[in-house]
Length: 215
Image 1 (tube, rainbow, N blue to C red):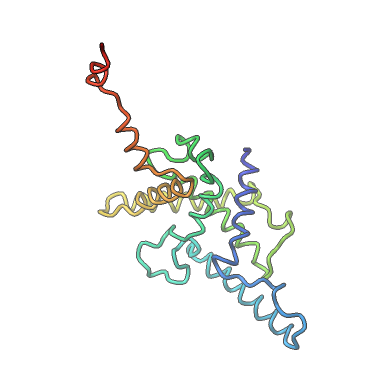
Image 2 (tube, rainbow, N blue to C red):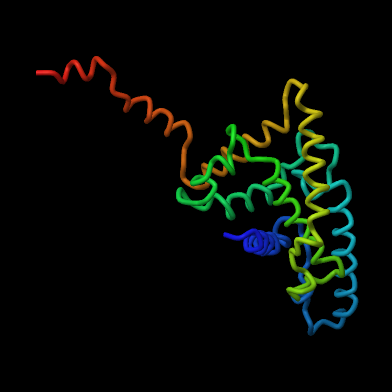
C-alpha cells in the first residue's frame, strides 16, 4: 500500500472514531423540528470548537483522559491510538503488522514513527471539526503530506524527547507504552505471543529424540 493510501485509510478510520472517543456532537443529530434548533446548533458548534482547542493543547488527545492532564502514565494511552493501530496494521494474522515485523515491531515494540503517524492522523481528523461542524469535503480535510509533514515532525520530536526523558527512569514508560501497544495489537490480530513461544519450545526435536528414532 502506498504512503498516500495509508494516510487516507488511517485518517478515515480516525474520522469515524471522533464522536465515540472524544465526544464531538454531530450537528445533524439536533432535532430540526424543535423551536430551539438555532440555539442548540449554536451551542453544539461552540462546544465542538472549544473541544478542538482543548484536545490540541499539549497533545491532550493523546492522553488516556484528555481532560485530566494530571493522570499518571496517561500520555499516548488514549484508546484511539490502539484502535487505529489494530485496524490499520493488525486486523488479522495476515495483516502487515505481523507480516513485516522488521517495520512494525522491531525489538518487540511499536516504533515511535508509527505512533507519530497515528497521532498526525488523529490531529488531522480533529482539525476536521475546527469550524464546529465535521468537514466532509475531501479537499478541505485531506491528510495532505505537504500540510501535515510539519505536524508529523512535531509529534515524532515529542515522542523522541519523551523516550530520552524516560530512558533513565525505573518505569521507562515510553518503552512500556510501545510494548503494550504491540502486545494488545497482536492479541487483537489473534496472535498470542506467549502461546506461540511455548508451542515452539515444545515442538523442538533434540538429539535424544533422533537417537530414539534409530532402529
